[in-house]
Image (tube, helix red, strand yellow):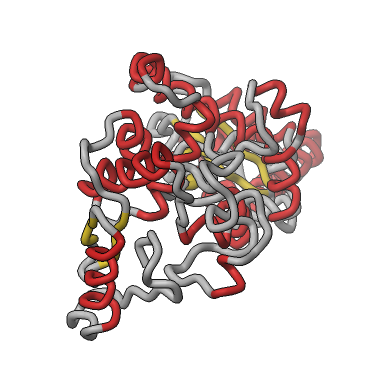
Length: 364
């Protein structure tokens, strides 16, 4: 072969019958190389096309490339596979869910696939948060707009589908961390959260509910109040006992968080206008429980309602260290208020608890 090539001179290659075929072949090679270079170094678009792609374990890179081409993320599936092979990445692609856009070059896409740089879209529901607080969080993080989420929470068709008897899904969005990668609208997210609530409740509380004198709505409603009132986990059963004792005696619950529900997030302080507000949820103005939950309680708060401590307490006041002083009588409670809220400053390093009406039940 070497001897044969040595006999071919440049002049012989570009002369006679070999001239145009060789030129055509060289042009094809050059055009192919140019196209490949453009494919490698120039993104297919400007970022207007964004796709979430799932690559299963043992999946085909060829099928993935075809999907990316069909979705408009890359210009050519064959060139994508070729670049993967030339770079030695074709056998290193890791399974997972990825987020790609047409503003990414093929090497950038392959780098994500080979390093397992998967796309995560997680949202944590904090214990006790109301639908209004969750709406603001979702909006601020760019997941869903506030109003569409609240509309979905109150959607009568969705409520009927979920079997929730009430004006909204308040109380049934279980506090946990959720994967929103495949969630396209607020209703789907609500289905996921209420589904988790049903799963947890059925597994932990169905039997205890049958022994309770409270309905499920009442259990979740009281648990949402306990969640808002409690600071220390171990006090939840005691706080639940206070409210249950007051209910048995026909006393108003006078819970601060109920006075601001639907108006603003409870920040530890209520005003005179708050406690006088005419609202079906304001337990300063009504007797017994509100018509529904004021937040989404944790399993601990639900358990506290179903298994409350046995006490004779009717009052509690914050001690400025995250715990409460519990009292059996109003006189004892007023002395505790004088000691903890009026008599001394909060301890260094602890939160400052305030209460505009310190002679009534409330954690702040």
